[in-house]
Amino acid sequence: LQPSPSTLSESFSEGMAEVQALSKRRLFAAPVSTGQFGIMRFLMLCRLLRIVRILRMVSPLYDCVNLLMDMMSTFIWILSLIFLFCFVLAIILTRLLGHG
Image 1 (cartoon, rainbow, N blue to C red):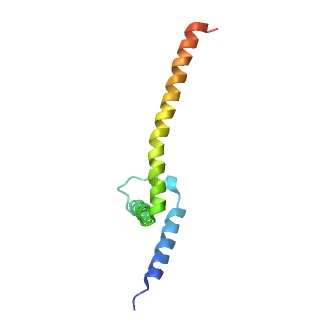
Image 2 (tube, helix red, strand yellow):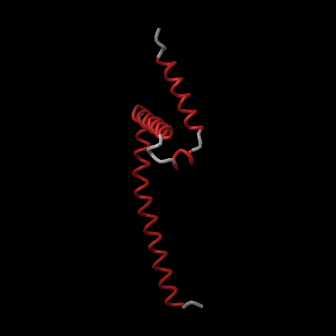
Image 3 (cartoon, one colour):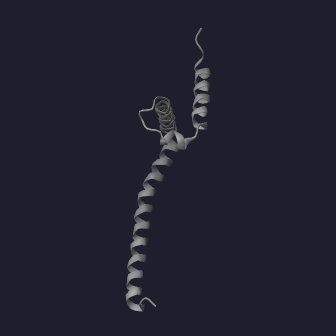
């Protein structure tokens, strides 16, 4: 007698929820070579890969994530230019107005 696929999926989800319930600070602070925490890291990575697989299956959601990733590179460039502008302006104003 084999369990149904939905039962396996539910038990896998419950197991992953238990893994998530563990302290993440302790989990990621442990060295890779430790047995139990290495397995938990692997299980969390499997959960992440499962989320990526779901994203690829739902094309509107996948498109939305791709657009967000494209937007992030533009956003970083804009923030960099704003920072550079403020930095240059601060140097110029310090030279013009002095320190006090």
